[in-house]
Image 1 (cartoon, rainbow, N blue to C red):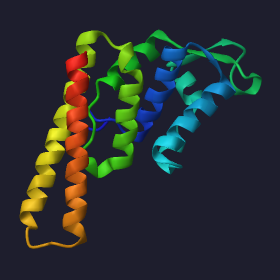
Image 2 (tube, one colour; image 1 turned 180 degrees about the vertical axis):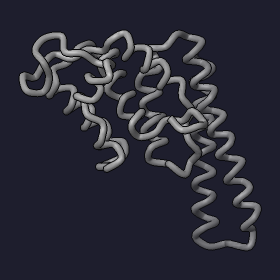
Image 3 (cartoon, rainbow, N blue to C red; image 1 turned 90 degrees about the vertical axis):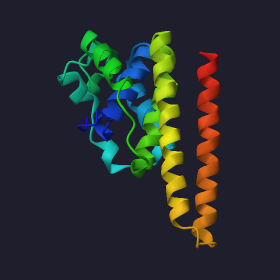
Length: 181
């Protein structure tokens, strides 16, 4: 994680692996690898930043373990360890980076929402509130940008308006989720 406690690509991959195992239970090596690859590809597309973390490394670090067999070579059944569950909790509570890392942000937000139900109710509310605050910060940033470019009536202004409308929709969606938790 960065100094601001936000997730890096490596941690995002850890989160999807650990969350998948905690949510669905143990999976065969090939099934887990395929599930993780499918999810990541659909959220951010092929990414060199996300290809580096292997299931073998997570096993070596003691975050997942083979429940039968030994690993990739015999398609072992894999599950999270206690250390993996603790790491999952830490990763779920990490910050989301500023919008400059949009593809990774989308992945992290998707992972948080995908696995949110695995946290206690108070932590769920805290995470959704943090995501709403992120939208508020994004709206403030975009508003500043729009005010600084009032003379632009072309494509950039239209793009900013569209981005602002999307951020407002996201904020309303997170606020609605917060009232339902």
